[in-house]
Length: 397
Ligand SMILES: Nc1ncnc2c1ncn2[C@@H]1O[C@H](COP(=O)(O)OP(=O)(O)OP(=O)(O)O)[C@@H](O)[C@H]1O
Ligand SMILES: [Mg+2]
Image (cartoon, rainbow, N blue to C red; front, top):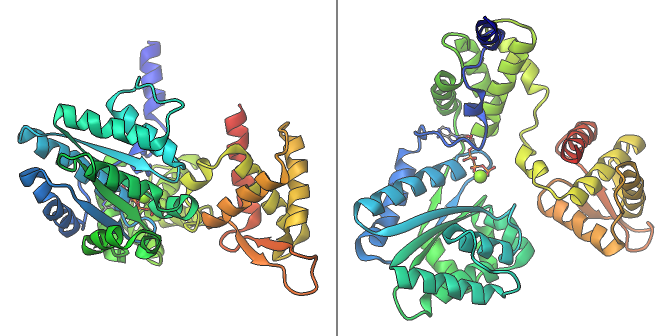
């Protein structure tokens, strides 16, 4: 009897069939309107399968245009195609904004092959050599996607890509490591050496922003997976596609759809209407990616919270770094964290700047010495303050 009640309740009050299908980490089976780009990737990798050559490809495009999803889907197909050809090739997708040091990226590669590989205390060059030896002795191949590599290069310089390409080349045998670099645009290539730069330059796949009608198709294909039949109105999809087309961003479109569904559930109604989409729009800012906030280290979050609070309190466009640092100390106390030293604070701030979460500007003449001023341009500071607080609380519990 209770089983029935349980099921009845579980089935009630939601427009969703499976909301996880709307989450950014879900990789759809089909990438709508990206057939040509998929084909291009396949063409670039033909020599890898046919001649056991290595390849380097760069995938570019602005936020939410499907770079990650397309590359992941391609990686899965590549593995299948290789195994059908009796070639041992594995695909590994690394997010370089999360794995933020050369060491951590290379350990990811090692652990992909053997989770118990003893790597602690060894330098990255040695570790990479081990990977190459491993591949050589097993006649195996690796295609590694370096996602969000632009942030990584900005912070760590070009050494990772350089080592990955050189170590494999210098091992004597065939180069067994192929690279798919993923970035917003090509500008990070400038810090690479000329040879590496040019190999990537010749193999660029650039994804355009989606038009409203493309977004409509993407949304429509996801609606069936995520929602119960017939609950999402046509008009709602059209409206969301139109809103998101200003950015051409499919992530934003899908998040609006998800939130519109949540709004319908909150009202206990069985239809997701345009009004729900409008409500959703008021809660989301496409300028800041949720994952970017989530993946910040605790003290980076605390510094960002300090910036947001200072700006909310002062109601000014910018805050001086000295004031932000003082607020940071107060924030640390509130969360029972020991505040980091000035140089560390400074590094956190720089990283937030590199991620585009804050703007850092010289404070101008007549202001306190070398001080800089910090601002938030893209979203309301108050919204950011709330989001970060939620994240810190969630993590501390
Ligand atoms: N053509 C498509 N068909 C179906 N879903 C798509 C398509 N393009 C993107 N998506 C979905 O939109 C969301 C964002 O895509 P993705 O994460 O690949 O964007 P991105 O280009 O990597 O963005 P970022 O630069 O922010 O990392 C994901 O949920 C993805 O599944
Ligand atoms: Mg991505």
